Length: 505
Image (cartoon, rainbow, N blue to C red; front, top):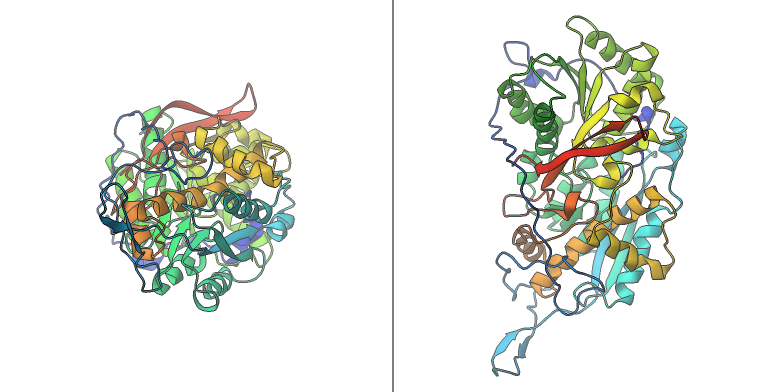
């Protein structure tokens, strides 16, 4: 999970690791299939669009955060109560126009507590502010500024302790709290994403979900019309970007041998079968060696079983022809990388790693991560989340706005990782604001869905490369641009290189 700070520790893989390919996806040739319609390209670099000034009533300092493109949804839509917004008279024309809804807005908030999971690994959390503290600070700051689009927030919170029991059980409990016990209008999800069926549960209840966590694969995204991702790409787009851009950079080519470690969840399987497998062929790469582990739903158990499974994968990858480029297709990418790197080092194996933003690459350069330093030069990837990818992200105007918003509440990020967490947490709030500005305060699921679809590329998102997003009726994951990153020995840090490019469509 993005911004999880190594939240899913090595013990998470002990839920069940193996090296068998799911039988329903094995074709007659013994490879993972079938080869579905991928349709992915990565066009040349284009300039990102600048944000536009917000209308009156937006939060202080909200330059570039309010959309000006696309068609606004029906402003007479109801707000979950069966009552359309009242009509008011335009003083200049004497004609009636829909009024703005300003009643308090009940929202659901999720955030993650990883203390137990991190402790099981012995990893240090570099942050000084908890996710709970930062999330609640945004609610206080927004209400102090008059609310989102004039609507003050009434927050119903759910704190997910990722080390406690089944993730599906936690996701079900969170969904029930929001849809049965409290009947919120919209959920700002800082914890689950698609994990444990959380998004699916909200969809069935007709509650709009804005998340900055995993958004699943292209199929799952298309089947969930009542959600929007702030910056995270679908698995198809994220890992296709890694393959495509690494071929373009020259780090991956026809002479390399690719190994893929695949988490066996349905969305990962589909992304590989429909997109990544066919893309490997189109790029002219050698057929990859594929190792899978069972879909993770708990941090229960010890790390030994997970470590053994990764060690077995390394043994297979080292058999001729030796794998020299490794990719991890998993929502637990950072944890799998941590396990793999430790085991690889113990066997004097140094393949190049092909990472996405899910890997949280810059964290591995910090003390306390447990990642072997001789493996650091092998870190390479393609991502769109600066504070997650690299060691020194430049703050955008939207990032600065987020930090300024919570400063009066007493949140002054003390280090780089604190700033990254604060900026990342801000995203769902600003996307909800942009949607509410379009709907004149209507927070019905249909109204918010239409509003986000109409944003186009007008929404500038925090902790997203160049703030660039792109939404439409068929695109609900907001990320637009990606850039290659890698370890730089001279600074012992992760930096971007080359120029941004559009993520595959």
